[in-house]
Length: 143
Image 1 (cartoon, one colour):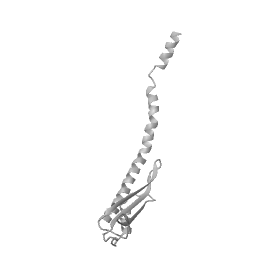
Image 2 (cartoon, helix red, strand yellow):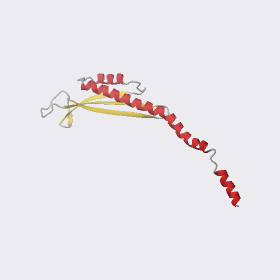
Image 3 (cartoon, helix red, strand yellow):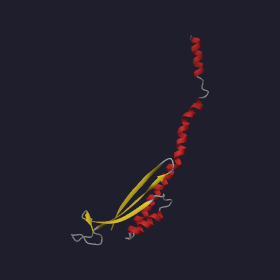
Image 4 (tube, one colour):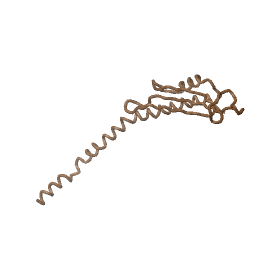
């Protein structure tokens, strides 16, 4: 019995084939990385380009621009490689002491209202394996 146990142990303690088993265990992980990496990088680039479009609209408003359709056009033109469903909107709002106010008119207390410019951009990001809808809103106070 002791002899058969030694033979059995010798058969299963062999190290031949260990590399093949390790490769078989690691291969799915490597394949997943190779398949998803292009989509992840495309999604990251798309988000950065969307942020750039929002920044372009904000810079227009911070430079004194008040035409919201022009701000939207500038943002969309700055958005390189935008997705087919890309959308960008901009708005101007004013507040008097934290409450809604009318832009271009003095507040009830005679002060000048605070002016805020907001831009919202949205689109579908990613590729065929990893994809998602992304929306960002950026608001700055002007003056």
